Amino acid sequence: MPTSRPPLRPIVCLSVCLAGGLSLAVLSGCGSGNRADAKAQAGPPKTYVETSLVQVREIQPKVIAVGTVLPVKTSVVASASSGIVDKMPVEEGMFVREDAVLSELRMKTTDLDLDKERYILKERQSELELLETGSRPEDVAEAEAKMLQTEALYKTARRRLEQTQQLHQRGARTRDELDEATESTAVAEQTWKAAAEVYNRVKAGPRKEEIEIGRARRDTQQKFVEFLEGEREKRITQAPFDGFVTAKHAEIGQYLGLGDPVVTLANLEQVEVMALVDQFDVKFVRLGDKAKVRVQGNPPIDAEGVIVKIVPGSDWQSGSRGFPVYVRIEDNVSSDADSEAGAPKPLLTEGMITEVTFTGAPITATMIPKDALVRTTSGMEIFLFETEKGKAGEQGLAKKLLVETGLSEGHEIQIVKASPLPGQPPVRLDRETRVVVEGAERLNPLMPIWLRPKNGPAKAANAPPQPGKQPSSN
Image 1: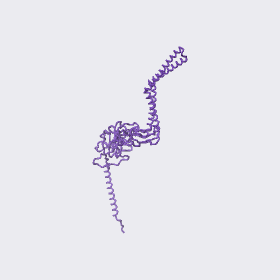
Image 2: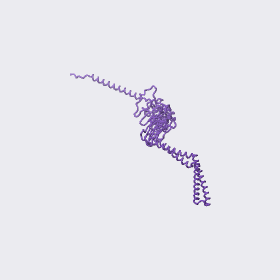
Image 3: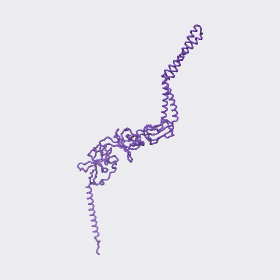
């Protein structure tokens, strides 16, 4: 029997299929390689940025600090005596004029003592006037009459003595009668002399020493009365100046000791705003300069004052590094302060929180847009657009600088110091330096960058931000 063979068509078909598949694979591989080569030739996408020129110009430093309103003149008015409060005519918030009564202690025993000593003073005054006036004419006449009377008696006794002596010589009178006549004459003589001295004394009036003694007694009593009046005044507490009662420390019936507080009084016609200025900014604050003060509100309150004190010491023990600066505001009362309708109305009151703006002398500063700053973990940095040699003006390299900032003005900020990376030459920021203001957060040092054309690619076409970088919010 003839041998039979299997048909060849299926094998041929399989061979054709394998050959066709291989050819497709080869063709497919060739096409993929061409696209990779094209992509490699095209390179990575361009990084577009926007730049701005550095500004070197004069700026006027402005420092803003938070302040507190304080009265220029304030006093805790204390009691100058001790006792029970009998009157208390003031309340917190009241405006009082100078010498107005703030409190009064009980006065009954004080007034009684004072009345008694005033009567004694009148007595002393009358005694002095009597001495200073001298003898009355009636007294002088009386003394003179007594002197003349005793003189007449003396003359009579003298004549009798002479007669008795003559009679005694003739033996008509005894020795006893003579002695008696002699003694009577001597007594009459002394009586006449005493009356004469009284007359002379009355006629001359009081002695100078007596007048001085009377005057001293009067003055001593006068001082004692003044002392009691002063003690009485101490029991009445009066306002030392015009002001507002900001605190009340006593009530009627309360016992006050010597030196105990009665009220706290504040004069708000002049106020000072105490602001704490940072140690980096205090150099821009000068004595005598004006400063603007604002109190936020609806509407806000604006005022202007003069810097009167700069305290060269901070409260560092409590952690503060701010230096107290005092701004004085004059005429801190409303326009109707002197009206008869009521008390003055202060513009700023004690304890208000304010915003104080200090303006320093102009300085020359290097300014860049705040958008150019990139905040990193190592500090602030910026990128400069540095044109490559032999390249068009639209292409350059990103040059990284570490910077320290200073004052800000609007959308710009001062560059105090700019340091290149290690190994890089120093850079001087001038008016021809271009700084990257858009896209800086996506840059690495010395990478190629292109200026974005006005109608060029959208900002979203740039590469994503590099890790660890974020734009500054200043």
